Every structure is written in C-alpha cells, then in structure tokens.
Length: 377
Image (cartoon, rainbow, N blue to C red; front, side, top):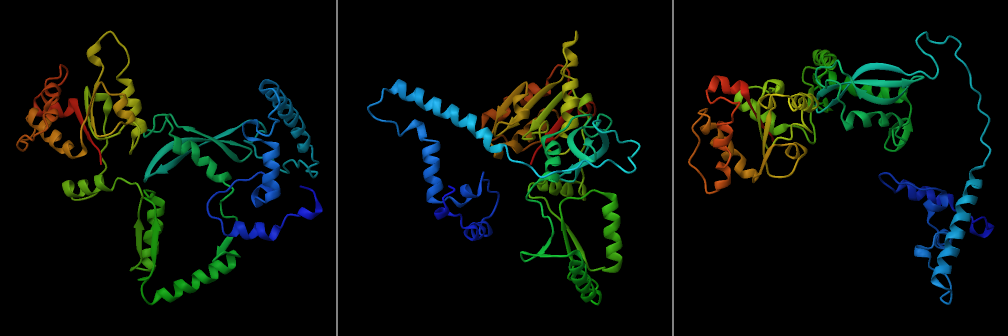
C-alpha cells in the first residue's frame, strides 16, 4: 500500500464522501476508497475460511499454519499503534470550583422528555462531562427507574455527526450571518403580524418554553406553533377529546388495583408513566403470607408484548375484536350494555371470570376502585 505508483486519490475520496448519506464507518482511507489494491490486500491478509492454501497440503496442517499466521498478524498489529502522539499539557484550574474534585463525580437532578413526558433522572458528571444517566428515586414519575432512551441520551453529546457549525445549503456560515438573515426575515413578517411564521417542535410540556412562545405571539399574533411526534399517542389524545372535550392524560395508581385488565396496552414497557406503573405493579407481586394481597393481570392483545409476558392470564385476540371484548366485559360487571354477541366465542371466555374474581367486587362504585382498565392505541 505504500507503493508510490498506488498513491491514494484524496479528491476521489472526498467526492465519494460528499455523495454519501447516513453513517459510514471505515478503519483507514484505503478502506474508504475501496481500491482494487486494498481489496487484494484484504483477501491476502484475511482469507475467507483460510482459502489460498496449497491443495496438496494436509487439511490439519493447513489449519495449523493458518492459525500461526493469524496469531503473528495479531501480535504485529499492535506495533502499528505505537505512533507518537503530539505533546499535550495538563493545565490545572486557575480557580478550581469548590464543588469539583478531580476523580469524583457530581450528580445533577434533571429530566429527560419522551413524547412530552418528563422522566426524572440523575446525570453523573466527571469534570463537567456527563457520562452516565440513572433514575431519580425522588421523582414521582419514575420512582428511581430509568429507561433505555434516557440512558442513551448522553450519547447525543458525543455524536460525531452533530453539527459543528452553522451551515446554509452545505456551506458553513457564521452566527452573525445567521442572526442578520433571521432579523431581516422577521422584519418582513412584522407588517403581516407573523402570518408566515411557523414553529415546528416535538411535544413540549415545559412551562418556560410555553411562556416564551406567548411572548412571541404578542409580537407576531398570527404566528403558529405546531407540535408533532412521529410515534406519539395521537389516537389516545383524539379519544380523550371525544370523551372529555379536551386533551386529557389519564394517570393510574396500580398500588390500589387488585385486578388489572389490559386491552392491547403495553403499559409496563411503553407509554406515559410506564416506569412508575412497572414499579407499582411489582410492589403488589411480592410473596407474602396472604396470597389475596397480590394483584392479577389479564392481558388481551393481538401481538406479544412485554406486558403480556408478565400476565397471569393472556388471550391473543385480533385487534378488531378488542372493542367487542371491552363491551362484553363492561356488560359482565354491569357497567354498560354492550352490543349483540359476535361470532368469535373466544371473546367471552374471560368476561365472567374477571367479573367474579375473588378479590374484586361487581358493584360499580367499588369495582372502579378495584379493577383498572387500560386501553391502548
């Protein structure tokens, strides 16, 4: 690869990178260029299934020779990393912060939002660099639990694909150029009361950001703020508007529920407040001398979910039959009169059993406190 006749064409590599999209990983510029010489080197250095040995050679001996060469290659590969790094100086603080001790982490109570729902977390920081996310045991929404999204959020700070500068149509511009252009566009909207201004964000529940937008609306009354989630609870929000006349979030207290009926709702692994629900649900599953103190979980769902895997009783049912099951169950507990029975007899296997559960009550007022109905999307 060091042959002068096979010099790497950096211009061709740059052109290839400009036309690429998404993440692309390589170990060297030669690997990125994928020249015929490099492909030949890969074939000779890492033969597939040790091909290339003499056909007359004994198979056992051939494998031994292959392992010898691979072991030597691994040993010599470490020598290529013995490059001299540039000299770097460790400069101490001129005025070291009082709470900062090198080698000892600091923890900050904050929140990570997902779908507009805030989860309380503790961010571990080393010398000003966040390194680990854990749950905040004093936050009522998580009770000390933490999900994969919050733990992975710290990686966004170290993502090499993050924008390093302000750019316009692929060209790097300065912040002064950005603010100058932005002020000119706002000045043009002043006479229109901001009719051409649209702000697009994900679901935001921050009172501070809402107050800032109200200040913007005072200056530009016709401006609009659009919130959208690609995988948000849009159906649940539409159902709440239909039922209550406004978007409403429902919160459950599973510590008081002896019987939990989940209708296509993966409430232990997704959705708003699922970390709290999982802790509350597990608190009623502890082995005690009184078996009646433990709750029971009935799950009706069209596909396997983590909640269904934890259920005491699970019924696979088509998504189109979930509504009929809900009507049948409501009829069984005298909560409503459902429509006429359909052709699917599986829908009515559990309705009487759930209504006659030993720790539940069929009286409507008491039953609402004993049984929790969870309906999904």
